[in-house]
Image (cartoon, rainbow, N blue to C red; front, side, top):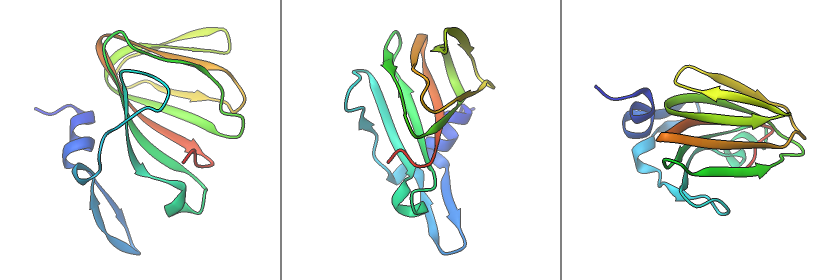
Length: 130
């Protein structure tokens, strides 16, 4: 059986009334521009939403880190779909496991660490990151 993350990545699709369905398996995985071992699949970007929001699948390899950073203008959410790890945010450690939804306020530094199995997230940004 596929994990929820694999289902989104390999069988998912974007459905909207004003366009044909977009299969997510047609979208490429892209390396994160700053953090080694992190890949992104941009499902919905600000280009499609007029900058209102963006949705991304995120794969973090085992033991890898999305280093300390801040989004000054975006609220960010993480829905953990597979694997595990932790997010350091506002001086607290948030345990990441499937089913966790984390809300990261704009302007707050945070860091994400993948555990031994890696970490797979559905990340959303309001307004859009990209």
